[in-house]
Figure (cartoon, rainbow, N blue to C red):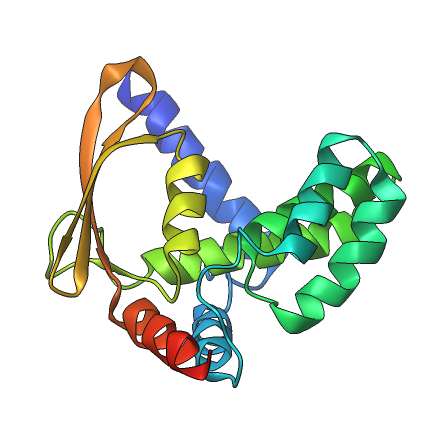
Length: 194
């Protein structure tokens, strides 16, 4: 009975707090919005699914690493208008706003960062082809793997699926599947345009 009482008390407190706050705070991010944003962006004319190597993006990363907050914010403004689904740039921008003590803008970009990641993972658990994470770029794969603290040990393309062996902290290995069909179509389209 002693171990059950704290559990029961926590349930009652959580229910009371949730009722007092009003709206359902477990509803989360608008996944439909971020999913639509990702897939619509992938359909745009001139979309290139490999964006991490782009010189304009590299300037943002270099400025971020140098601690040049104002340059990051200036350069990323143009970049995110062109590619609003670059989650890592949203995270860099959020950290720059944090440095400037601009908490509303920090939270806005963190919301986009996590909204994009939630969109990627909303279709399944990524543990099989049937439940693969659907990505519009391989760069989304690397962002997700980095966010979980993983390092890719092996990568294999199997039809429209990317199979990654990921080592996480502590040496645990995880196999993740990504549906890369949208990425492959966009890549073929961008190569035809050249």
